[in-house]
Length: 66
Image 1 (tube, rainbow, N blue to C red):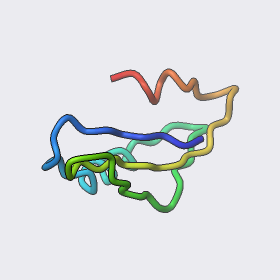
Image 2: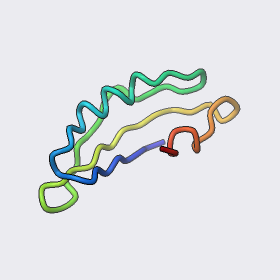
Image 3: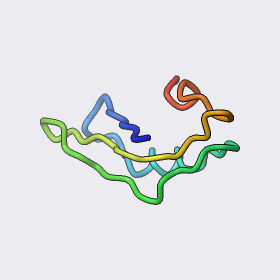
């Protein structure tokens, strides 16, 4: 599964966000090894990361709700 994080402001430290996200551990969830920062517009970038979910143990909603 690919997940995207789009910040409100251009100066958001997305590398720090990635480091905090990959600290989240749950049985049935494996984070991908890498992440990408892709430009959106006006100097704003989005964080793109991957993970593998075991559908019996982790709901997609768990990862996408604030």
